[in-house]
Image (tube, rainbow, N blue to C red; front, side, top):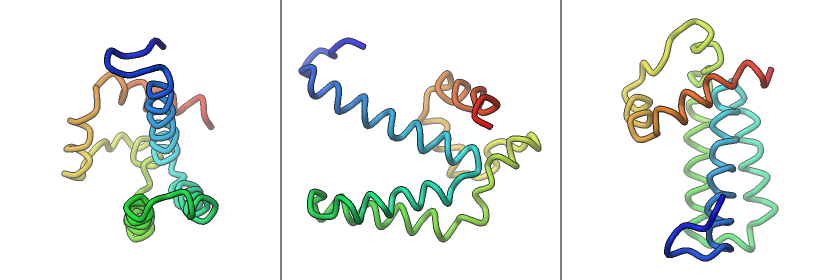
Length: 114
């Protein structure tokens, strides 16, 4: 990938790394691995506590708590296998914000991850 106008190569690399991080976690959620996502985020919070600012720590706590409290309903692998897609209004809103091609690419690639 090439640098985007207005960003140097280092900034582009950080942005692409962040996109890859989010994409990997999304794939894990779609595979029904919410426990691994929670565990990884908790581990990141502990290992990088000093480097993370207060706002980033707060955001991580919020995300971890969100996933932990809703874990029993986050069985996306089972929902996809049963043909149930995006029944939740929040999911529909999130899906609208994603590019259709990205969602199709992610859900279409799930079979290769099992």
